[in-house]
Every structure is written in C-alpha cells, then in structure tokens.
Length: 148
Image (cartoon, rainbow, N blue to C red; front, side, top):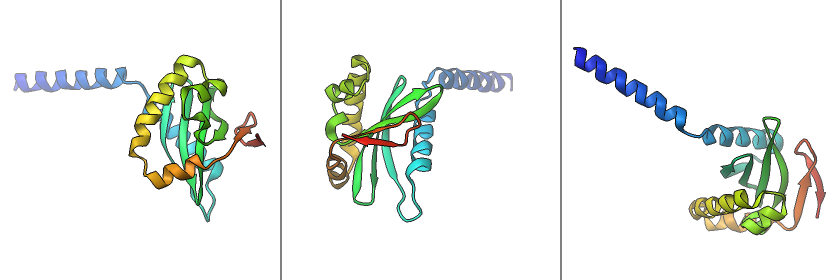
C-alpha cells in the first residue's frame, strides 16, 4: 500500500510541476476568442475565428464571417487583448507584422507559427482571408477605426 501511495503522490507532484511550467497560451487563445466573438458575432452571422497564434504580448487570429475573412493583429494592453488592426495577407509574414508595429523577433516567430497552423486551414477559407484588402486600424478599445 505504501508503494502505491508514494507512486500516486509522486505522479501528482509531477503533473502539477509540468502544468505549472507550461506557458498559458491556451488561456490567452481563449481570451482572444472570447473577445473577438463578443465584439463581432451577430445573431445572423457568427464569427469563425482561429487559429490563434500568441507570442509574448502579440497575437494573430484568423477569422471568417459569412463570405468575408481576414486576420486580426492583437496586443495585450493592461492585461486585456485589444485588436490593433485587421488585414489580409499583409500581416501573414514577418515583414508585414513588423510594419504593423510588432517587434522583429516576435514578428518572425508569429509568422512562422501562423504559416504552420494555416497548413490545417481549408483552402477556401484561406482564400476568404486573403481577399481582405487593405488595413483597418482599430481604436484604442479595439473597435473599427479607419480603413487604409
């Protein structure tokens, strides 16, 4: 009995230690998705968001809604995820992300991880996201700003 108790205790300690050492990216992804749905879901047209790629205080989230689609660039500000802008392929690579204000090292990691994640996205959905023209900057609260 003592051996089983010790083994169970050791396993419990290892599980807690492993989960504590994991970055909390899933929580960030969930917070981003919740924010996007709260902002853009409509009764007649729900937002389809994801994948969501998080690096440090920056994230890129793919989205489609009806026949429209694009990518959102988000930034964590005062503990909240705020949508900075929406674009199409313009923020799909490191150069575009850096031009949008993401530090170069983070932009590179975001772009690499986004490219990998988008390999699982259906071609038709990617085409809707790529069709987004220009850049729509958001205000400080993440609402639509000006289209460039």
